[in-house]
Image 1: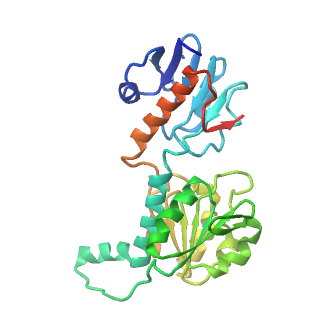
Image 2: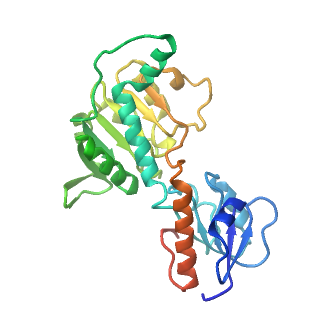
Image 3: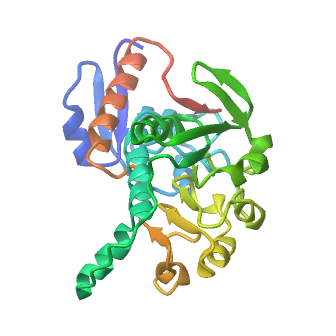
Length: 305
């Protein structure tokens, strides 16, 4: 494609950031109301929109849908036939890993308790567990898992990697998920960053949690349904385990849900990728995709079909 590329964006902020480009026409549509007429070579849905919104593309001439998220669970069932879908790999990994490690530090060093103590002037300087020298198991070794590892190593943590299949790299062994229950009892911290699929839904269940040692910390920056909420509540309400969750099931977590007030539970409202780093990285990805399409080349990050 050398000219006449039509790019559909969900809001004026993205339109302004991309600025005029030769051979490119920008149109605006957020998948509500009537679709723009004519072919849309590249369409960007709103950030954090539900996959069901993509049903609005039925009957619309769309080439590539460029998501602003890494995960794409639920998309295949609503994406019209013939439409290509790309995720935002490379946009959110840094921010998500930053939050995951921050939650580890906060949970290990007792930051939530210190904040509560500050409200009533309580001076509790009892010793807390470190992140240094802790054995950390990364369940999921894609972009987010690798970014978490890169940030953990300077903290002098001992990191074990686990992916869907076993393999070796320059740092040694990456364990397969088939060795999960051999590895869980050996680690004081478990960070989960797997994509949501039929295979990973409720991966973190009662059996998974029971295999973790007493006092261990679970960090979930994947998707809420990767963990069984009832099982999380059971293991934290008795004080045996601690959890740090950026995602929950259901989401948003209801205000009266007992997880909010369970000691040892730290919750952030699905903000792993929602940092100042996101928008400029998303703009760079869109510029790259537009450039590739203008040159007649295949786009990057294609995950469907």
